[in-house]
Image (cartoon, rainbow, N blue to C red; front, side, top):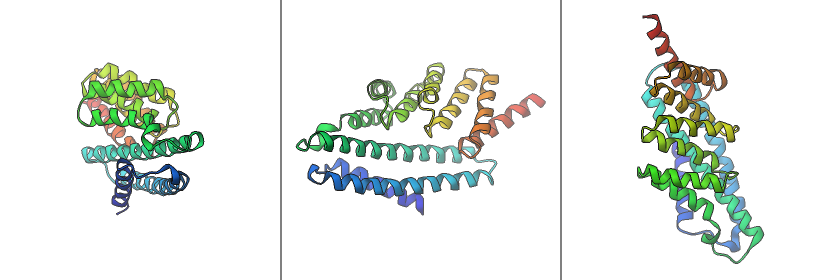
Length: 234
């Protein structure tokens, strides 16, 4: 049931922020409360990922279901980063100005949300432009790794495999410590596969298994390698 509690808390936060219920007069209290809640969410997020990893030890099929679960985890990770960015913006605003309204200092977060909204509605070209502008302007922001990953996703969704490949590479190049590195590598492998470069794809899948054995992407990589091996032995 922790997954549902996780989703409920995230939805509750987003609803509060959309309603503009944060007031600067109580910003310090709000920041501390948000930090406590985010810390708890991160604990439950790690537990969810561990449960997912444990499932991999028992499951050797149903990759479609597992990939859907992986996408859900990435979505939750994205929402946590949105909350962290919100806390950062609150702290910056509190330290600089005490009289501005909430919306006046939310440009980075609003920028990202606009691009993500376009992505969710299938407006991939427009979303790509928005995410790229975000990365160019806020390369050190909490949401920068997500923005870079979604640039790759925008190209991938448009079947532009070569462009997507180059953008996924940038996730690890610029944000090596991000949890999205394994996801980006998996999508790199899929891009190589779709481009007909099976050797390169195999190398990437092997690197995922070696470097991220407990991550959800590892099972998909193992299955891809197993398929390659079966083809070669025929």
